[in-house]
Image 1 (cartoon, rainbow, N blue to C red):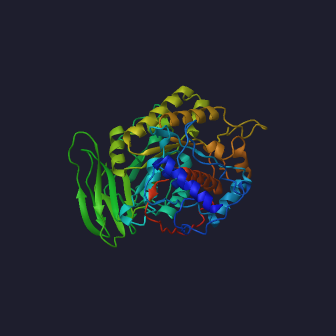
Image 2 (cartoon, one colour; image 1 turned 180 degrees about the vertical axis):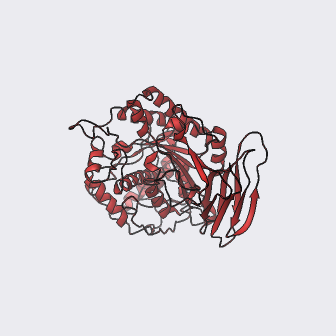
Image 3 (tube, rainbow, N blue to C red; image 1 turned 90 degrees about the horizontal axis):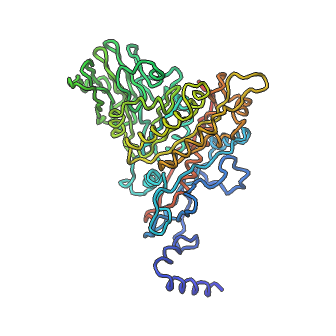
Length: 516
């Protein structure tokens, strides 16, 4: 019988030609050399769906009626093996918490945006960034390419919680490309402190949400960081740790009223920058090739009005760099206050492969308070997505919807009632995202839909303001997002590649814990 099956297979191949050959190459039974699993972590055995509370269904949603090929076109060699999601101790811990919270997770809507002549999907909204991730699995180091992600969001990610879990999961598999954007010091009292400079007094800051709703315009143009620090006295300084970096850049504003500032590397003078005298303020970048063994870079203002957007720090080897820009009370409307020219200059410096827009919560509250109408919120979100597409045309885009939003002060018996505009805002963001060729992740559905915020509250994972998750609640949200992103990556059609990846991952430490 086995010999007969082989004869039939050969006859079928001869009768159908090269197309059949390509089809047969996709079959699991195709003759490819045996290979060990990728060494990320002990590879988990398949488990019943009920045992995995987060990963619930395939993570790729094509346009209705379209089917995804197993690979993008026939080619020589083996299909690229993509790593499984490593279920380390930290992941399993968050899985158990998510199960108790009845947070099932959700898939990423990843639409097909290009088709071949036969009508099959040729490219999805996330194909380019996933293709870059594939290069980081290559045995040939010269073929590995940096993967840059920029995330714009609100207070949910202002402390770099949620996104820190996603960053860690990606970097542990694909390599740590560095911390990316770092501020002079935190923009907010609870802002992230891990990746900022160690600043002296002498700085004040401006950021997006200080300047909306009829408030004065920012004195200096805002850029990619959503805010900046301005010196108000001579000697204002900040020091960044660059001990693991090779590439370091300072983002600053050249304007005619600026004082000069100097840069030192490990106490040794490196460079002094003076204003050029240009009539119009212009975003500038100071790129520094750090000497081997460099530990600290210090920037010192030599007077007032030195405007620093931040610095970028990257490691010498290619990997994933995930920039987090989280501004308290931000919405699409406030992000439109960013200066278009400065944003374009900063995007050109960062060269993102993926832009993530994580908004919606503040929009719900402002509709309820009649600050904005529903239509204004929809229009502003569409404008924001368009601007991101225009300033980063080579980047894929992913929008992330709001978590469940509830009324903070309600009569007894109606506590934690879901805000009435949440579903409509969520649906509008999804519709606009897919129409614009962006992928979409429904955080509201992922955390369990209506009633989920109450469950988080009962478990002690909601702050007293009844707006912000805290502690392990933030880490669970990050895990839900990371899992959905990995699932979408697994479901993306694979490419051929002759090399066999030999990949090791960093140990996966727990990211959970009480918020500081």
